[in-house]
Length: 503
Image (cartoon, rainbow, N blue to C red; front, top):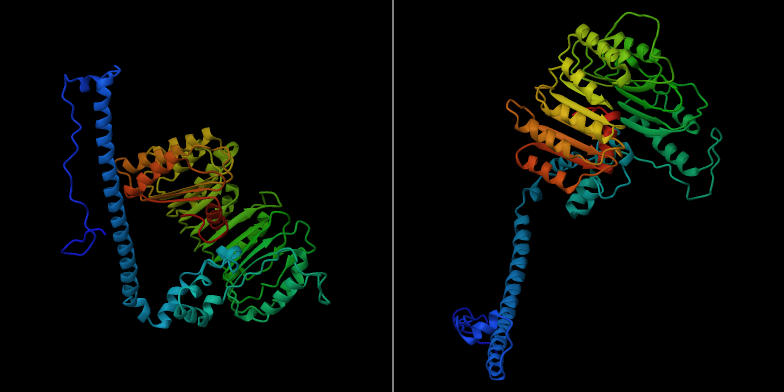
């Protein structure tokens, strides 16, 4: 039995032995054998074997002592882990959350929900996110969560491949799949309570949309993803009579379908369509605060008309700077566009004329797929910019590094506080170390006001060295976000198709 300590009762370690003397006197035969390759004499081997034996005995004792120490250390660590857990559980009893009124808890829960139209395609199916996750924390949280109807006000229906071959008679529809019609039929019964609607549609769903006319009094935001390359209709007016609608967007890359909506009350809109359709909307949209004007399916020119004044417009993105010829926005704060290299001078001229005509306090700028030379030219015309968003879809490694080199100079955008860079399908860029170097240069430059930055990489990733350099910038105080893969793609969707197109 191991001896016990007389004070604490724990197993006592053996009394320490004198330190094993491994010193060898220089000039001795033993010293010579240790430091040369000379063979020992037969008479010397007995001595050497005795040294090895004594050393082995001491090593055995040391191994035994170390084993006992490891065992004791494990006992102490296990006890510490158990005590930490016990303390944590008891501390949790004192948590204010346990005494928080249900209505306050419900309000907190509401802030954990994903954004609505901006994140429409991810709502409903992910049980690792709110509100589903909240139901698995505790019985009280589950009760509060299930009794708070606003947490369950978002519905997502995924029209995936049919898993059932049964059909239902639907006299006014050619669809044979039961699930889409039945889900829509059930949900439209509550359409008077809808506030936001996001959906991807095909032509066969148009009869379902037609039933919404005059039945959506509370609808405020609509986002339509038009999936059909060969639609059977040219227009749709089911949203024309929505009295509360203020935000409307349609994304269609195949064919223009004219949606009728209450233009006069809109504060935000995004549309892929002919220039004339956009101008017709803008002439009536006096309350517009934000607009995404994407000209498709037609020429970039219409008969000369009077300048359209947009008195409340604060954020504007245009697919072609030529559109600016027709507009004036005196309170515009944020502007974004493509600038093609072959039309740089002309497009910058359009921008200069627009800014001179508007006399607006522009401070946010978003440039999509813009080369380094054009970026420098545009920023040179707008020195007041404090927030810059750059996206890259087709640049090579050389183009990317040239852009980063351009931005490294504080003479370019000297008042820049926020810098957002996104790489879309950036297979041509394999090394992002210049991004970190550019940030470091601006961060440490005299007079720099840089506060935050972001880097989104949809199809590429950072090497360890660049990660390390960016992490060092974070530690130095720069507010820096890095998103890769799906996270970056989701942010890009929000950037281009939602109300937050820039930082």
